[in-house]
Amino acid sequence: MKTIALFQISGWEADYLKKKLETARLSVDVFGEGVDKASVSDYGRYDALSVFVGPQVSKEIIDKFSNLKLITARSTGFDHVDVVYARSKNIALGYVPNYGENTVAEFAMGLILTLTRKLYLGIDRIKEGEGFSFEGLEGFDLKEKTLGVVGAGRIGRHVIKMAKGFDMRVIAYDRNPKPEIAQELGFEYVSYDDLLKQSDIITFHVFYAPETHHIFNKSSLDKVKKGALIINTARGPVIETEALVLGLKKGIIGGAGLDVLEEEGVLKDEQGYWMRGANDDAKGVNMKTLLENHILFKMPNVVVTPHNAFNTREAKTRILDTDIANIASFFEKGAVQYPIP
Image (tube, rainbow, N blue to C red; front, top):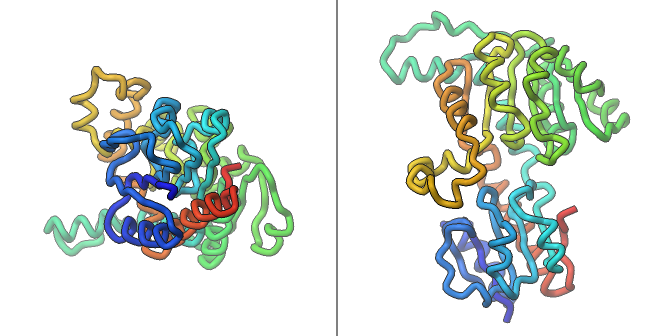
Protein backbone atom coordinates (compact mmCIF):
# COMPACT_ATOMS: atom_id res chain seq x y z
CA MET A 1 0.00 0.00 0.00
CA LYS A 2 1.28 3.46 -0.94
CA THR A 3 1.75 5.92 1.93
CA ILE A 4 1.04 9.64 1.73
CA ALA A 5 2.27 12.34 4.14
CA LEU A 6 -0.02 15.35 4.48
CA PHE A 7 1.72 18.43 5.86
CA GLN A 8 0.44 21.70 7.30
CA ILE A 9 -3.16 20.53 7.60
CA SER A 10 -5.55 19.95 10.51
CA GLY A 11 -9.21 19.98 11.53
CA TRP A 12 -11.94 19.22 9.05
CA GLU A 13 -9.55 19.59 6.10
CA ALA A 14 -7.27 16.84 7.42
CA ASP A 15 -10.24 14.58 8.15
CA TYR A 16 -11.72 15.19 4.70
CA LEU A 17 -8.48 14.55 2.81
CA LYS A 18 -7.51 11.52 4.89
CA LYS A 19 -10.92 9.85 4.51
CA LYS A 20 -11.03 10.36 0.73
CA LEU A 21 -7.48 9.08 0.21
CA GLU A 22 -8.03 6.06 2.41
CA THR A 23 -11.15 5.29 0.36
CA ALA A 24 -8.78 5.14 -2.61
CA ARG A 25 -6.81 2.48 -0.68
CA LEU A 26 -3.90 4.73 0.26
CA SER A 27 -2.26 4.91 3.69
CA VAL A 28 -2.20 8.43 5.13
CA ASP A 29 -0.21 10.19 7.88
CA VAL A 30 -1.15 13.73 8.92
CA PHE A 31 1.28 16.36 10.17
CA GLY A 32 -0.02 19.70 11.41
CA GLU A 33 3.33 21.39 10.81
CA GLY A 34 5.07 22.27 7.59
CA VAL A 35 7.35 19.68 6.03
CA ASP A 36 10.40 21.58 7.31
CA LYS A 37 9.26 21.51 10.96
CA ALA A 38 7.36 18.23 11.31
CA SER A 39 8.73 15.42 13.44
CA VAL A 40 8.99 12.56 10.97
CA SER A 41 10.25 9.28 12.40
CA ASP A 42 10.75 7.40 9.12
CA TYR A 43 11.17 9.51 6.00
CA GLY A 44 11.73 6.46 3.82
CA ARG A 45 8.21 5.10 4.23
CA TYR A 46 6.49 7.83 2.23
CA ASP A 47 5.69 7.58 -1.47
CA ALA A 48 4.11 11.03 -1.73
CA LEU A 49 3.99 14.41 0.00
CA SER A 50 1.04 16.81 -0.03
CA VAL A 51 2.09 20.31 1.04
CA PHE A 52 0.52 23.73 1.45
CA VAL A 53 2.15 27.12 0.76
CA GLY A 54 4.90 28.56 2.91
CA PRO A 55 7.46 25.97 4.04
CA GLN A 56 10.10 25.31 1.41
CA VAL A 57 10.24 21.85 -0.12
CA SER A 58 13.94 22.24 -0.82
CA LYS A 59 16.59 19.88 -2.17
CA GLU A 60 17.52 19.02 1.40
CA ILE A 61 13.92 18.17 2.28
CA ILE A 62 13.42 16.11 -0.86
CA ASP A 63 16.60 14.12 -0.20
CA LYS A 64 15.28 13.06 3.21
CA PHE A 65 12.38 11.20 1.55
CA SER A 66 14.37 8.45 -0.15
CA ASN A 67 11.39 6.67 -1.75
CA LEU A 68 9.50 9.76 -2.85
CA LYS A 69 7.57 9.46 -6.13
CA LEU A 70 5.14 12.39 -5.96
CA ILE A 71 4.85 15.90 -4.51
CA THR A 72 1.52 17.72 -4.70
CA ALA A 73 1.08 21.39 -3.82
CA ARG A 74 -2.31 22.27 -2.39
CA SER A 75 -2.00 25.69 -4.01
CA THR A 76 -1.89 27.49 -7.33
CA GLY A 77 1.59 28.83 -6.62
CA PHE A 78 4.43 26.33 -6.49
CA ASP A 79 7.50 28.52 -5.99
CA HIS A 80 7.98 26.89 -2.56
CA VAL A 81 8.82 23.57 -4.24
CA ASP A 82 12.23 22.94 -5.83
CA VAL A 83 10.64 21.83 -9.09
CA VAL A 84 13.88 21.49 -11.02
CA TYR A 85 15.51 19.24 -8.45
CA ALA A 86 12.37 17.13 -8.00
CA ARG A 87 12.21 16.53 -11.74
CA SER A 88 15.88 15.56 -11.79
CA LYS A 89 14.91 12.84 -9.30
CA ASN A 90 11.99 11.73 -11.52
CA ILE A 91 9.48 12.84 -8.91
CA ALA A 92 6.07 13.71 -10.31
CA LEU A 93 4.61 17.11 -9.43
CA GLY A 94 1.00 18.22 -9.09
CA TYR A 95 -0.71 21.47 -8.14
CA VAL A 96 -4.09 23.19 -8.05
CA PRO A 97 -4.40 25.27 -11.24
CA ASN A 98 -7.64 26.91 -10.12
CA TYR A 99 -9.83 26.75 -7.07
CA GLY A 100 -10.95 30.21 -6.10
CA GLU A 101 -11.16 32.60 -9.01
CA ASN A 102 -14.24 34.20 -7.53
CA THR A 103 -12.99 33.70 -3.95
CA VAL A 104 -9.78 35.71 -4.36
CA ALA A 105 -11.46 38.25 -6.63
CA GLU A 106 -14.14 38.91 -4.01
CA PHE A 107 -11.44 39.44 -1.40
CA ALA A 108 -9.57 41.87 -3.67
CA MET A 109 -12.74 43.89 -4.15
CA GLY A 110 -13.21 43.84 -0.38
CA LEU A 111 -9.75 45.36 0.09
CA ILE A 112 -10.56 48.01 -2.52
CA LEU A 113 -13.78 49.01 -0.74
CA THR A 114 -12.04 48.95 2.64
CA LEU A 115 -9.58 51.54 1.37
CA THR A 116 -11.87 53.70 -0.77
CA ARG A 117 -14.51 54.01 1.95
CA LYS A 118 -12.13 53.86 4.94
CA LEU A 119 -14.10 50.99 6.42
CA TYR A 120 -11.37 49.83 8.77
CA LEU A 121 -10.85 53.31 10.20
CA GLY A 122 -14.58 53.76 10.74
CA ILE A 123 -15.02 50.38 12.43
CA ASP A 124 -11.94 50.91 14.59
CA ARG A 125 -13.20 54.34 15.67
CA ILE A 126 -16.44 52.84 16.97
CA LYS A 127 -14.82 49.84 18.64
CA GLU A 128 -12.25 52.03 20.38
CA GLY A 129 -14.99 54.29 21.73
CA GLU A 130 -13.84 57.38 19.87
CA GLY A 131 -17.37 58.49 19.03
CA PHE A 132 -20.03 58.01 16.37
CA SER A 133 -18.63 60.48 13.85
CA PHE A 134 -17.76 60.37 10.16
CA GLU A 135 -15.29 63.26 10.38
CA GLY A 136 -12.12 62.41 8.46
CA LEU A 137 -13.68 59.36 6.80
CA GLU A 138 -14.45 60.85 3.40
CA GLY A 139 -13.81 58.31 0.65
CA PHE A 140 -14.36 58.24 -3.10
CA ASP A 141 -16.65 56.49 -5.58
CA LEU A 142 -15.49 53.61 -7.72
CA LYS A 143 -17.81 54.71 -10.53
CA GLU A 144 -15.85 56.06 -13.53
CA LYS A 145 -12.50 55.42 -11.83
CA THR A 146 -9.88 53.39 -13.70
CA LEU A 147 -8.94 49.97 -12.39
CA GLY A 148 -5.68 48.50 -13.65
CA VAL A 149 -5.54 44.70 -13.50
CA VAL A 150 -2.04 43.21 -13.69
CA GLY A 151 -2.63 39.65 -14.84
CA ALA A 152 -5.94 39.08 -16.61
CA GLY A 153 -6.11 35.35 -15.99
CA ARG A 154 -8.90 33.50 -14.20
CA ILE A 155 -8.83 35.62 -11.03
CA GLY A 156 -8.13 38.85 -12.87
CA ARG A 157 -11.11 38.31 -15.17
CA HIS A 158 -13.41 37.82 -12.17
CA VAL A 159 -12.14 41.10 -10.75
CA ILE A 160 -12.85 42.77 -14.10
CA LYS A 161 -16.44 41.49 -14.09
CA MET A 162 -16.99 42.83 -10.59
CA ALA A 163 -15.40 46.18 -11.41
CA LYS A 164 -17.67 46.60 -14.41
CA GLY A 165 -20.58 46.15 -12.02
CA PHE A 166 -19.32 49.24 -10.21
CA ASP A 167 -19.25 51.15 -13.54
CA MET A 168 -15.46 51.34 -13.48
CA ARG A 169 -13.27 51.73 -16.52
CA VAL A 170 -10.95 48.71 -16.64
CA ILE A 171 -7.56 48.32 -18.29
CA ALA A 172 -5.32 45.28 -18.02
CA TYR A 173 -1.77 44.17 -18.62
CA ASP A 174 -1.11 40.55 -19.47
CA ARG A 175 1.78 38.78 -21.19
CA ASN A 176 -0.72 36.78 -23.24
CA PRO A 177 -3.56 39.11 -24.17
CA LYS A 178 -6.81 37.60 -25.43
CA PRO A 179 -8.67 40.22 -27.50
CA GLU A 180 -11.86 38.15 -27.55
CA ILE A 181 -11.97 38.19 -23.73
CA ALA A 182 -11.39 41.96 -23.68
CA GLN A 183 -14.25 42.47 -26.10
CA GLU A 184 -16.55 40.16 -24.13
CA LEU A 185 -15.87 41.77 -20.75
CA GLY A 186 -15.44 45.34 -21.95
CA PHE A 187 -11.88 46.20 -20.99
CA GLU A 188 -8.72 47.30 -22.82
CA TYR A 189 -5.25 45.78 -22.83
CA VAL A 190 -2.44 48.30 -22.36
CA SER A 191 1.29 48.19 -21.69
CA TYR A 192 2.40 47.86 -18.08
CA ASP A 193 3.75 51.43 -18.03
CA ASP A 194 0.48 52.80 -19.41
CA LEU A 195 -1.43 50.87 -16.77
CA LEU A 196 0.68 52.48 -14.04
CA LYS A 197 0.12 55.94 -15.50
CA GLN A 198 -3.64 55.66 -15.96
CA SER A 199 -4.93 53.59 -13.03
CA ASP A 200 -6.59 54.99 -9.93
CA ILE A 201 -6.39 51.50 -8.42
CA ILE A 202 -3.91 48.76 -9.39
CA THR A 203 -4.57 45.15 -8.44
CA PHE A 204 -2.06 42.33 -8.94
CA HIS A 205 -3.11 38.83 -10.05
CA VAL A 206 0.03 37.24 -11.47
CA PHE A 207 2.01 34.10 -10.73
CA TYR A 208 5.24 34.61 -8.85
CA ALA A 209 8.14 33.82 -11.17
CA PRO A 210 11.52 35.42 -11.98
CA GLU A 211 9.85 37.68 -14.54
CA THR A 212 7.27 38.94 -12.01
CA HIS A 213 9.70 39.41 -9.12
CA HIS A 214 9.38 43.06 -8.01
CA ILE A 215 7.32 43.90 -11.09
CA PHE A 216 6.29 46.93 -9.02
CA ASN A 217 9.51 48.56 -7.86
CA LYS A 218 11.20 51.90 -7.19
CA SER A 219 11.26 52.76 -10.90
CA SER A 220 7.49 52.24 -10.95
CA LEU A 221 7.12 55.22 -8.61
CA ASP A 222 8.21 57.52 -11.45
CA LYS A 223 5.35 56.22 -13.62
CA VAL A 224 2.42 55.48 -11.33
CA LYS A 225 -0.51 57.89 -11.16
CA LYS A 226 -0.23 60.04 -8.04
CA GLY A 227 -2.53 58.80 -5.29
CA ALA A 228 -3.17 55.39 -6.83
CA LEU A 229 -4.15 52.53 -4.53
CA ILE A 230 -2.17 49.27 -4.66
CA ILE A 231 -3.88 45.91 -4.07
CA ASN A 232 -1.96 42.63 -3.82
CA THR A 233 -3.61 39.25 -3.32
CA ALA A 234 -1.09 37.41 -5.54
CA ARG A 235 2.35 36.86 -4.00
CA GLY A 236 4.34 39.18 -1.76
CA PRO A 237 7.51 39.42 -3.88
CA VAL A 238 5.72 40.80 -6.94
CA ILE A 239 5.91 44.13 -5.11
CA GLU A 240 9.18 45.54 -3.81
CA THR A 241 8.41 46.38 -0.19
CA GLU A 242 10.90 49.24 -0.04
CA ALA A 243 9.29 50.85 -3.09
CA LEU A 244 5.84 50.54 -1.53
CA VAL A 245 6.94 52.14 1.74
CA LEU A 246 8.70 54.97 -0.11
CA GLY A 247 5.69 55.58 -2.33
CA LEU A 248 3.33 55.73 0.63
CA LYS A 249 5.60 58.01 2.67
CA LYS A 250 6.03 60.42 -0.25
CA GLY A 251 2.32 60.46 -1.07
CA ILE A 252 2.88 58.97 -4.50
CA ILE A 253 0.76 55.97 -3.51
CA GLY A 254 -2.55 56.78 -1.82
CA GLY A 255 -2.94 53.52 0.06
CA ALA A 256 -2.42 49.77 -0.09
CA GLY A 257 -4.47 46.65 0.55
CA LEU A 258 -2.15 43.68 1.03
CA ASP A 259 -3.05 40.05 1.67
CA VAL A 260 0.51 38.91 0.92
CA LEU A 261 3.93 40.24 1.90
CA GLU A 262 7.56 39.57 1.26
CA GLU A 263 9.01 37.48 4.10
CA GLU A 264 5.51 36.61 5.30
CA GLY A 265 6.75 33.16 6.30
CA VAL A 266 8.90 34.72 9.01
CA LEU A 267 6.05 36.98 10.14
CA LYS A 268 4.08 33.87 11.13
CA ASP A 269 6.69 33.00 13.76
CA GLU A 270 8.82 36.06 14.43
CA GLN A 271 9.71 35.10 17.98
CA GLY A 272 10.83 31.67 16.82
CA TYR A 273 12.83 33.24 14.03
CA TRP A 274 14.70 35.56 16.38
CA MET A 275 15.50 32.66 18.70
CA ARG A 276 16.86 30.70 15.76
CA GLY A 277 18.62 33.72 14.31
CA ALA A 278 22.08 32.20 14.30
CA ASN A 279 20.96 28.95 12.71
CA ASP A 280 20.77 27.89 9.09
CA ASP A 281 17.01 28.47 8.74
CA ALA A 282 17.62 32.22 9.19
CA LYS A 283 19.82 32.43 6.12
CA GLY A 284 18.43 34.38 3.18
CA VAL A 285 15.92 36.35 5.25
CA ASN A 286 15.88 40.05 4.39
CA MET A 287 15.92 41.91 7.69
CA LYS A 288 15.26 45.27 6.02
CA THR A 289 12.09 43.92 4.44
CA LEU A 290 10.88 42.61 7.80
CA LEU A 291 11.28 46.07 9.32
CA GLU A 292 9.53 47.66 6.34
CA ASN A 293 6.58 45.30 6.83
CA HIS A 294 6.18 46.60 10.37
CA ILE A 295 6.18 50.16 9.03
CA LEU A 296 3.34 49.17 6.68
CA PHE A 297 1.35 47.69 9.58
CA LYS A 298 1.27 51.06 11.33
CA MET A 299 0.26 53.21 8.35
CA PRO A 300 -3.39 54.38 8.53
CA ASN A 301 -3.86 54.08 4.75
CA VAL A 302 -2.61 50.48 4.62
CA VAL A 303 -4.71 47.38 5.29
CA VAL A 304 -2.84 44.09 5.76
CA THR A 305 -4.49 40.68 6.06
CA PRO A 306 -2.70 37.34 6.73
CA HIS A 307 -2.78 35.63 3.30
CA ASN A 308 -6.49 35.02 3.81
CA ALA A 309 -7.97 35.61 0.33
CA PHE A 310 -8.31 31.88 -0.38
CA ASN A 311 -9.91 31.10 2.96
CA THR A 312 -13.51 30.03 2.37
CA ARG A 313 -15.01 26.60 2.98
CA GLU A 314 -15.96 26.31 -0.69
CA ALA A 315 -12.51 27.22 -2.01
CA LYS A 316 -10.70 24.94 0.42
CA THR A 317 -12.94 22.04 -0.53
CA ARG A 318 -12.07 22.61 -4.19
CA ILE A 319 -8.37 22.62 -3.28
CA LEU A 320 -8.68 19.34 -1.39
CA ASP A 321 -10.68 17.70 -4.18
CA THR A 322 -8.01 18.66 -6.70
CA ASP A 323 -5.26 17.31 -4.46
CA ILE A 324 -7.16 14.04 -4.11
CA ALA A 325 -7.55 13.85 -7.90
CA ASN A 326 -3.80 14.42 -8.40
CA ILE A 327 -2.75 11.78 -5.88
CA ALA A 328 -5.32 9.16 -6.89
CA SER A 329 -4.64 9.67 -10.59
CA PHE A 330 -0.89 9.24 -10.11
CA PHE A 331 -1.15 5.97 -8.21
CA GLU A 332 -3.92 4.59 -10.43
CA LYS A 333 -2.77 5.79 -13.86
CA GLY A 334 0.87 6.82 -13.41
CA ALA A 335 0.28 10.54 -14.04
CA VAL A 336 -1.14 13.41 -12.01
CA GLN A 337 -4.30 15.03 -13.28
CA TYR A 338 -2.91 18.57 -12.95
CA PRO A 339 0.88 18.51 -13.41
CA ILE A 340 2.99 21.54 -12.52
CA PRO A 341 3.81 23.19 -15.86
